[in-house]
Image (tube, rainbow, N blue to C red; front, side, top):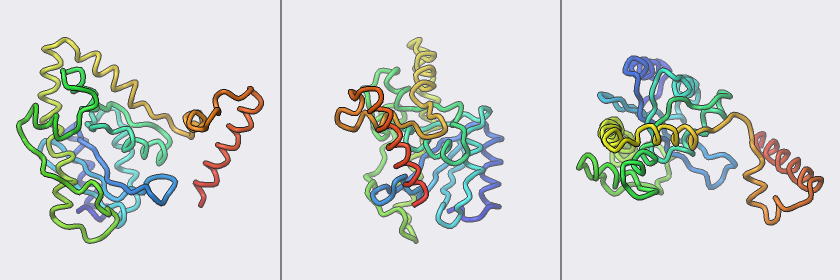
Length: 226
């Protein structure tokens, strides 16, 4: 695992030179307001890196790379994983391809899991994993680390095959546009999705809804400093 700033710097330099990076995270979220990030997995066509945020809490080089338009990022159902970027550095990830979205435009059902789309396009079968692992435990076993690595291992190859299929179908531009729409995660806290989860929250009169909105914003502020 990557546990020092020097090692992380070498990984980021390699990614920037490659111009492409698969990205995933492992986190736990049962006891905290925001999910606690426990691993960051990055991969190019010739490198896989697993970063330990517990040993190396300053991940700004990762977030800045993810926000760099010059590097293409590959994720699978990556909406939650991408939220760390604006929360950490105030701007959203850029140039992101979600292979789950791309797979839908290539004829697979929506939403398709990573294992199924990898099997369909590459023939590789992912082993049964550790979805419910206590990811903040240390040390992690080799089986756990392999499971984490497999989440990014095949994404560069998968995207190459998906892109070819999308071009054949004439749906590449549609897939890219949909990725841009669905993966846009602006900086700052947006209370409106929380209002929609509150019973009758969006059906209140304007003044009452404004009061509720202010309470939701204050709740978020207090949770951030707890």
